[in-house]
Length: 175
Image 1 (spheres, rainbow, N blue to C red):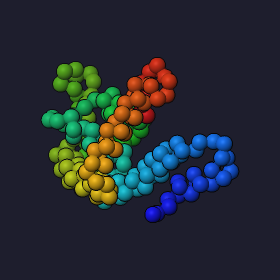
Image 2 (image 1 turned 45 degrees about the vertical axis):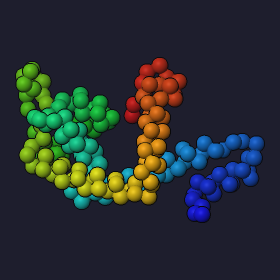
Image 3 (image 1 turned 90 degrees about the horizontal axis):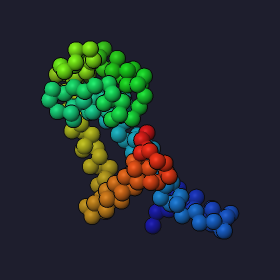
Image 4 (image 1 turned 90 degrees about the vertical axis):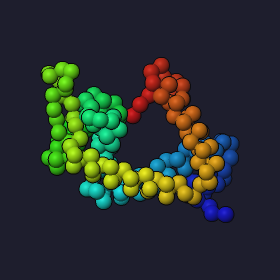
């Protein structure tokens, strides 16, 4: 059986601090390391379309809103979980490339929405198809039942964070 980095870390802690239960490292440590490794594989696809991870996220957020493929700055900030300035910077880059455009909101001419341009939609749709194939490839080492179980477990854990239970906060926690 393959001994991964986290297994070696746990073995070292069992020797150095046998009085402590270091088993949480087995889960949290692996999730942290996997997140870094997976992110590298995800970013490779975005790069092939000339997009950063954040730019892909902005385009995907607008696209999944449905026709007319637009949303407010506030929605982008909430959905992408980054600061107003980070969203603005990404939007400026995407607008300069002709992938998004700013327009007056139909319901309130004083506020603005961000719209996917036809070029932005075409690029995102191609990139998203490859992104999903990439994610399928990343998950292919797990059986269907393992993927289903992992999905349920992670959804439960994520909900505890979003509800403030895992952190002991009164407010829901978001990035």
